[in-house]
Image 1 (cartoon, helix red, strand yellow):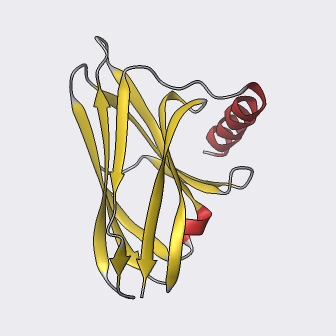
Image 2 (image 1 turned 90 degrees about the vertical axis):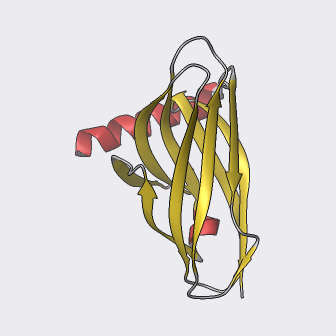
Length: 144
């Protein structure tokens, strides 16, 4: 497990120093309620559409610390294989390593709970095929 974390950090460091490759033939989206009340449970939906002729892989979803200051991720469907904090990126990485078949959509349901009031706003990175190839979307929920 420790070796996996070290390998992940080395890959991330390499990606940060070499630049990012945007994945090809992939569309991603994230939907979250704009406003919830403290204590509410809700679902965030992340979708990955593969328009390529070959399978691609969802390596991980990386959620910014700013969002997670007020939103707790309770569970996911399908469940992730591993999770780790990435301090160099200020994110929590949820590792999936799931195939996205050609012409198909993969949907991840993130079951969340509002735990801190405020406007929680950050990026969610969809790492496709490697940690160095990702698309980012804004993830924002205000907790009253």
